[in-house]
Amino acid sequence: MDKGYIYDEETRLYYLKTRYYDPKSINGLNLYVYCGNDLINIVDHDRCFPVLAIILCGIALAGMGLTIGGVASDNNILTAVGLGMVGFTALVSGCIAIAGAILTSVIGGITATAGLGSLGFMSAEIQETTGNGNWIIDTTGMSDGLYNTLLLLLLSMAVIATLGTAASSVSSAFNIKSINGFGKYGDYYGMRFQT
Image (spheres, rainbow, N blue to C red):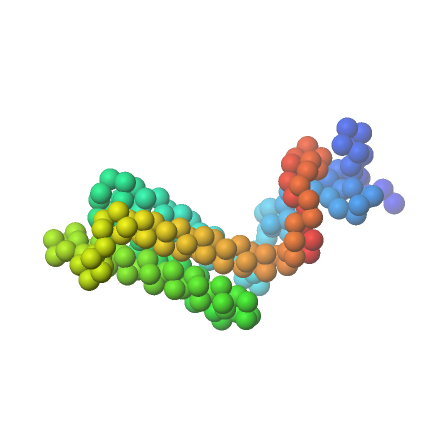
């Protein structure tokens, strides 16, 4: 029975019209795994694709950029907006992770705490914008340099925790246990996953 597979001498793989296949390792490069080999008709009926995780990562990274830009230019409004974005995404992803298993709930708790800390710094930046001082600096007596260092440290922690929580949900959605290797598969470079 001929299924129309074409053997590619250069790659030593079979071309199956949608992907390359290696019969020796029973693996292949599937460029369309994200849509189940159907670019036209695929619909995520089970809602397994972690869209929220990807959206939260984008917002967290944009917020990190705004915060760093705000601190560098001494712009309190930009810093407050960026901190709000990072704090919100860390809080949401942390609370979602808390609902998971024991390990993810510990990670979720750390992420949510970093989010709350970012939101606290955001409120201090908003207060400073209105000309009423900065409650963190005023109550602790810390210097501006220490304040900015703590702010950027907390920001980094919140973004990294948010990205880690998102990566965990992506690997869970696609049942990825580990990365087996990196290399060239056919004409493309990529990763092999153990599922």
